[in-house]
Image 1 (cartoon, rainbow, N blue to C red):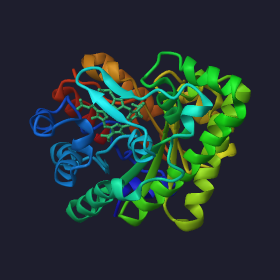
Image 2 (cartoon, rainbow, N blue to C red; image 1 turned 180 degrees about the horizontal axis):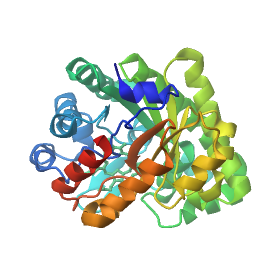
Image 3 (cartoon, rainbow, N blue to C red; image 1 turned 135 degrees about the horizontal axis):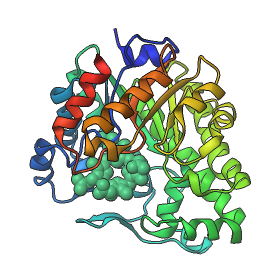
Amino acid sequence: MKPFLDVLAGKAAARPPIWLMRQAGRYLPEYRAIRSQARDFLHFCYSPELAIEATMQPIRRFSFDAAIIFSDILVIPDALGQGVRFAEGEGPRLEAMETPEALRGLATALDEEKLEPVYQALRGVRAALPSSVALIGFCGAPWTLATYMIGGRGTPDQAPARHFAYQHPEAFQTLMDLLVEACTRHLCLQAEAGAEALQIFDSWAGNLPERELRRWSEAPIRRIISGVRERHPSVPIIAFPRGIAGGFARFVSETNSDAISLDTACAISEIREQLPAGMVTQGNLDPLVLINGGGALDAAVDHILESTAGLPHIFNLGHGILPPTPIAHVEAMLRRVRG
Ligand code: CP3
């Protein structure tokens, strides 16, 4: 009935189900048209009607097997009282929290009222989706959220958060604990509003040394997964620890995730051999090859299909789709994946 959920339950499919990270975004003309209606990006996320429409756009155009709710990982710091804004063309800006004292200004729990529009949008999307399409809810992992909360913006090497964690490990642990609670609650509320699968984005896991990866990425994600599972045992959870190279098999066993999303840089054929055959993977097409198209795209798609043949795999990118991606290339990729 829902091929995406069947594969997440461990059943291999003749053709993998497909969706794309950031599938609602600026590469779509219909997205650009509604994006200009909202005052700024966060207002867009918090306007249920616009969020429902943005979520549905790529489903209508491409008939993907899953819809991901249109929102952002930074709604959690926003709902913890840290100011978040998206400066046009510059990416996210937060009031940087570079000292343990600054962290004390955060709320002690998520402002669920503030996030109600997200849950409302989930209910609306769930009602509007075709019966074969699954709905995904998501959150950022505590480590990735902390890199934005401490740095105040995206940083190439996450140095502010890494320094903070070395200098103030106790205050950093307190922040992780707060974020574990907030993420668990946000994911549970999304499941209660209709999300049928959940994805945790640890986009900046890749710059952590081994011991820090265990402590600041794997351990918090493990706690979130077990907390969500206690209340929603049948909702599968996908982890996306971007950039951890050879660490996927251990990551899965440490966090108990139901599936692992593979980034662009990892060798999917080798990783599939290291993972138990029943482990569900997702990914890892290069967003840049999708921009290029042609023979390079065909070869890259075929490589993923061959590396995952007979195994439970969800076709996706290794990171979000980029604004210059031609729609014709998404269509060509879909034809090839669907056979
Ligand atoms: O995948 C989807 O279609 C669902 C929506 C979604 C968005 N952001 C919408 C968005 C999801 C799942 C995210 C996750 C997200 N947001 C991550 C983790 C995944 C990743 O990319 O590593 C991160 C790190 C963020 C934080 C964030 N939000 C950044 C750094 C930016 C600016 C970059 C950019 O592309 O402009 C955003 C803005 C953002 N989030 C946009 C979208 C569609 C672009 C906003 C616009 O329309 O201008």
